Image 1 (cartoon, rainbow, N blue to C red):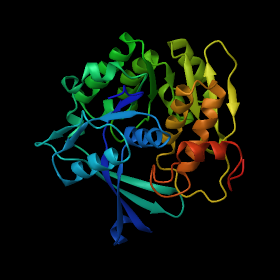
Image 2 (cartoon, one colour; image 1 turned 90 degrees about the vertical axis):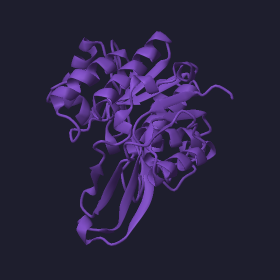
Image 3 (cartoon, rainbow, N blue to C red; image 1 turned 180 degrees about the vertical axis):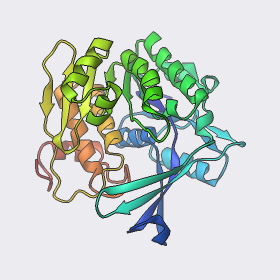
Length: 319
C-alpha cells in the first residue's frame, strides 16, 4: 500500500442528534452518525483526496463496528484499529438549541478509546506519514491515553515529521491546571498549533489574545494558527507580525459542530499541497465554512474540486 500522508489517533463515538429543538428529554427522534475530532479531520482530508489513517480503540460492539465501517467507507485507513472486548464504544447526544447552536452530553467514561496506550502504537506504520495530527482531547481521556499521546508526539519529533496539534480544550474532561501541565509541553514540540482564541487565552492564563500570543512564544510555541470563528483566523509566528485573515460569511449557518476539525483538515491540505501559510489558512477557513452548511461535523464537506470552486468564488456563499 502507498504510504499514508497523514495519520491521527483519538476517540470516535456514536452520536445521536436530536431532530427537534429543546431539552433532550422532550425529543423523541434522533439521527445517528459518528463523531470525534480526529475522525472528522480524517474524513475531511480523505474527501479532498489525501491518504489518511486513523486509529484508536473501539468497543467490540455494534457501535464500534459502525464507526469502523463508516470511516473505511470514507476512504480512511483503519487497519490499525483495535477492537476491545472489555470496554464499550462511547456515545454522546446532541441537543439542538434555537439560541446557542447546540449542546453535547457525553457518555464516554471507561470507554474503549480511553484505554488507548503506548503499546497500541505501530511505530513503523506511523513513521511513513508526512503529517501527524493530534488533539488535546486524547490525553484528557485518562492516564494511558495521555501516555500514548506523549509517545506519538515523541515519535513525530524523532522522525522529524510535521506535527500539527489542536489543543481542543475540553474542561468537562479535566481542569485547566491539568490541561496546561499536559498540553503546553505538547504544543512546544508541535510544528503548528491550532488553538481557538479563547483556548489560547485560557491555556496561557491571559486576559487578551495579544498577551497570550506573546506568552506562548516565550514558552517556545513558535507557530500559532489561531481560530477566531466567524472573524476568520490569525497567523502568529514567533518573531513576525501577526497576520489576520478574514473568514467566509454564510447566509444561513446551521451548526458549528466540528468546524474546528474541518478547519484543521483544510489547513493540513494546504500544507500537503505546498501552499503559502496564508493560503493554507484560507483553505482552512473555507472548510470550516462548509462544515457550517448543515447538521453534523463532516456531512457537508466537499471534494477537492468543490473546494477549489468555492475558493475561486463559484459559490452561493459570500465573503
